[in-house]
Image (cartoon, rainbow, N blue to C red; front, side, top):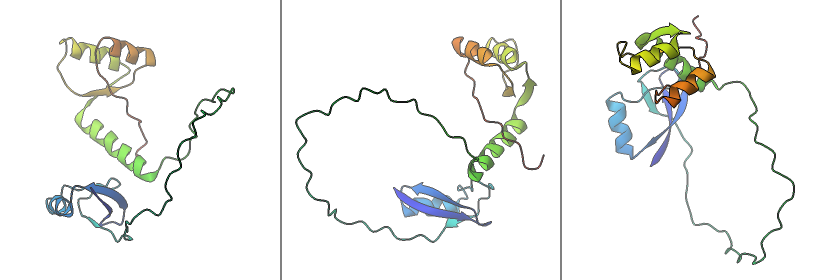
Length: 159
């Protein structure tokens, strides 16, 4: 795999991984590459510092100690996530997802669980829907084998 730093025509930078240099060239020529921030297909390789590989000069590993370490009697504290501002690229991607959902699916509001069940049971026309559901409603749908997705709904910049 080859890692490239990419840049769109409007200056957004992002990473890309490709099978080969030729694979990147083919995808770029067919406009299959897209900036995750603005969605443009005008993408090219950005200038990158070379990555030079070489032999490791690390010393030979020492043999493992035959005595196991003593167990720590204190329990491990639970992991906590520290909330911070959402990265701009993630916000832009979620905004694009929201626009796609709003353009291609029907909004059913708080009736989401009931409408999803009607579609699943064949009582309503199969189509993409979105709306709100409580945790209990979402769990009930999952228990009945009805697959749903949860999408973080970010505010759109133009609203």
